[in-house]
View 1 (cartoon, rainbow, N blue to C red):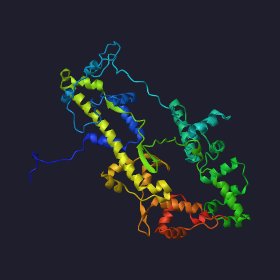
View 2 (view 1 turned 45 degrees about the horizontal axis):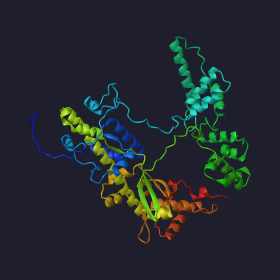
View 3 (view 1 turned 90 degrees about the vertical axis):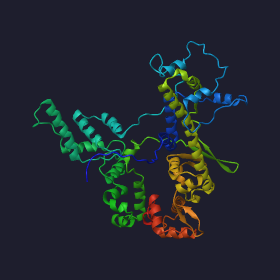
View 4 (view 1 turned 90 degrees about the horizontal axis):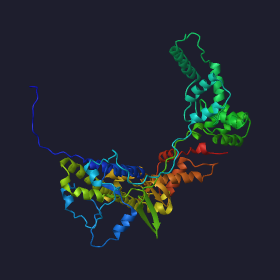
Length: 508
């Protein structure tokens, strides 16, 4: 076979996604707050877009019936030559003010103002003041260390300790590693200063142990612990419970405490199982991660994209788009663009692209709105019993079912439900809440897995704590209600709910 280069001609078809389709899918995926920022950014970069004020909308509605107004954007590309075919109203007042912006001149000059920057013509936006930073556990500990009577050498060692404490409040390394790290810093500083490293003031283990005691007395109680047992002991000490039964449980019977073996502990300590259980209840109120009380994550605010309200016995669905920028085509720029003789080929292409992008964006926003309403309308119709009676009546639902009914692809429904929330009479819920697998009943109907979990949770909350329900007992109760379920499925749902086994839930 001869090797070499050759050329050939082939005729074929390829399916390529329009870049605007990518943008439409991204807009469908965006939650409400992200969409707000996206539209504000488009207002800045596209001169053919402007905000539609409420007063202008009311004025346009009161115009004469003979006037035609463009309300929807065309799906296809718009030719710049066709813009000039629209007549310009004769009664448009001429610009007489010297200070008024000359939009025609700005358009011809490439949208640059004489000062080199585009002038701001709208009022500044007002945002709610929110905290930009929160107190971190490191800062909280440093503030306390600075108030202690410590020398420079102790402060440097305290800083090394604080740097090795995680967000949960535990010391993330050993004392040996802390000494190794700070002594290495001393050597590096001595080498940089040209000093002899033979007689450096290295930190010792007694100093590290003494500093650990200081750190573990700081707030929050339990900070600086090296394991869960030490963390609980520090918190009990802070509560002045040293020598109590609870402190003894953690110190001497930790494994039995975790396994809830109250009888074994009672026999070995000479107290009643009820006293052991009361001491365990005290321990259960301690924090296993004390650092989270200070270095908790920032609050995530949720703005519902959809609103479901019950009006006259019917559930109505609305889009919560009151805070979205209302976009429209700028009449000023449209009038300037009609005079095609002023522009060369490059400017015509720019104007055509911007005008097409503006009209397409307005159409994409409306399409997103209609798609979300279709999906939510089907969810409300399918889950009506949930809105009326509660989560136990939630029906199984999949993305494919919704896609088949509304005539869209499953991936489109997935984008609609991603990170979207609905304000309903049952609270603010993510749209993903309404989708879950199902189990069959003896009547041939289906019941949602989420509804079964709610039923299991209610059964456990109402049980006799002295004789808690086993997984098999829950299976039998559900079977009496017509739900066919395996014991291992009940155990799986119970673990997902964070419910302990029957033996661990039993109380004396």
